[in-house]
Length: 65
Image (cartoon, rainbow, N blue to C red):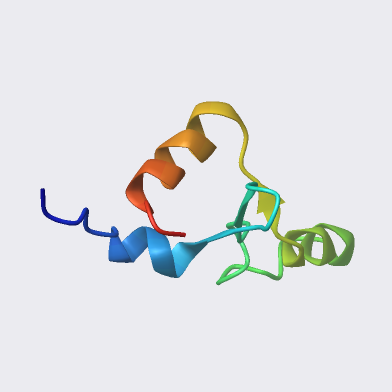
């Protein structure tokens, strides 16, 4: 049986932590930033942890991570 391929788009966007959680960058920090408060932008800097089926789907796309 051949090896499974890693989904390269997912590999670039997500990281799997040592405990198996999936980290992702929060959206909304690319443009149109003047209308967002400093507090809101500061909160967007930190990565989010994916939950439930979202995390499971990402893990399926990255079998060797």
